[in-house]
Length: 137
Length: 158
Image 1 (spheres, chains in turn cyan, red):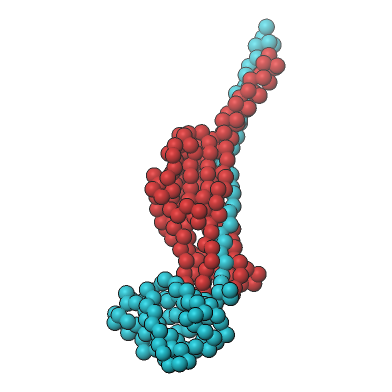
Image 2 (spheres, one colour):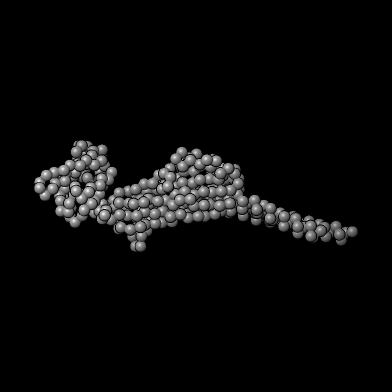
């Protein structure tokens, strides 16, 4: 009888210890239950050429392109006025808002034509950065 | 007696484990962070509230459970020997755990993706959106750039 009681106590002791161990194990597992996933950040850079024009811009020459897009980066609020000067001396004017692109077609800009930029609204005297994006259509 | 002990132990081990793993049953990638065409010298942001461009994840699990969300964010995108700066601001992450998540007007907007974010799983899980900004150099090399963004979701047990 004493032997059976002793065996029962031993079994209960083992059971209790195992329960404690499992609870700790499960707590650790619960805390570390995690999953990871990854995604891609993607972008495609378009070929381009940078020119810089000041508020009193000098004429800039464009060569060897049929169609291009002009994107203007400009501090301040003033618009940019582009003066496109043809070989015949006539000037076409286009107004571009800052940070917006403008698509010019072959009929407007031919290879070798000159153009220059100037600020139409006097907001500051800082430089104007003009990006020419060649679309190569 | 020993058989009973063994069965009890097995039951104790299996039942809570199943529950723990069910708390976060999955993280799914819905959409990549897509900047599209980028022009040299012109920074291009993608707002996390812009469908189709912002990164989107979905977390599923037991409603009411809290999870911790951690991002591993890259600082550049790469293109065979060239890189392009990638910026994540402190308000570039939004979440929504409602039954009908709304990316344009999320329940838990403008979170900081650089820090751990704790949020509760809703009946429809959690929808997570991430925006960012790429800053190409003035003479950025032409081509396709990419980087990995890693999200880790940890069950907090609450």
